Image 1 (tube, helix red, strand yellow):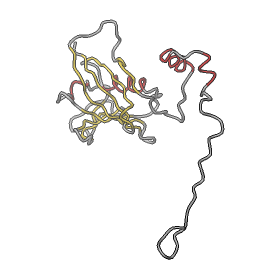
Image 2: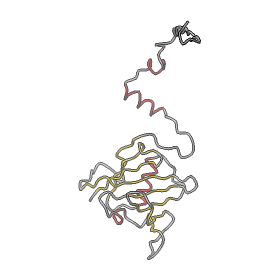
Image 3: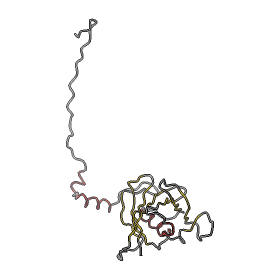
Image 4: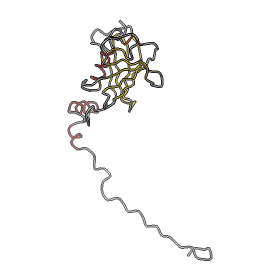
Length: 191
């Protein structure tokens, strides 16, 4: 079965993104759930996908509130619509809006299609997380597990973590020499 790889950018910072793999037959509801998981959102609010063009303009909607696809309906159902049904271009784009009150917006781009499925993975699968995502309800801090991960990544020992900043360069700064000015007299010469 084909695997679709999407990059899901947070609209406010394109350095924050998640790469997600999903099977061809899975629905927009599956994509919706894995995006919430990848960005650590709770899933208590409605959401809508929009087909999009290269300028991220919103077109046909795929909504979490629509349960059945009907002919000429303004929106499709996330549950009933497979993602592949709306893939028309090799770099297909979607806009994903979550929680209409807070208006979280994510930009989704198809970045790859693979014929090979990894049988060790459960799809949809979060392949890569880049950057610290937004906090749904306030300030997102770095948890203890993230600190341990950072410590291991940069090989920081407990001593370096406890010390913080070094004292290098601290102390009294040398005073700048005073400048002396001479005044120009009326004849154009200096005194």
